[in-house]
Length: 74
Image 1 (cartoon, rainbow, N blue to C red):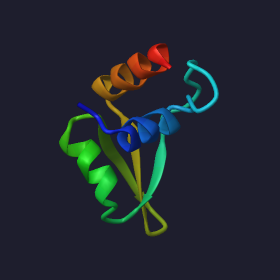
Image 2 (cartoon, helix red, strand yellow):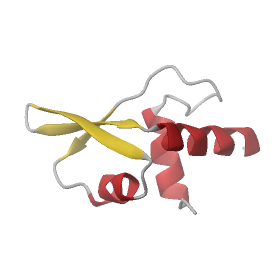
Image 3 (tube, one colour):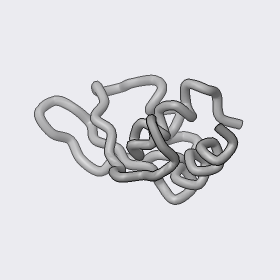
Image 4 (cartoon, rainbow, N blue to C red):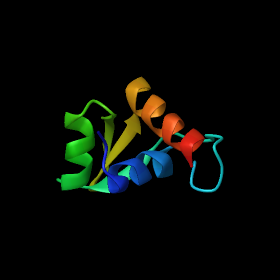
């Protein structure tokens, strides 16, 4: 079960902060961000790049499903 902070980060990654429609799938994080590590460990996010000292992540299909389910309930 995702925490509210985890769910909010998944929705933010997908651009679902103001509507249930997703228009992106990326998140720029500081190296070693503990919240992002939790999301990766849960299988909801994956790292796809290292650029300019930051790590770039995207939601996996499971993360998209989690965020979408939350958006429907909201």
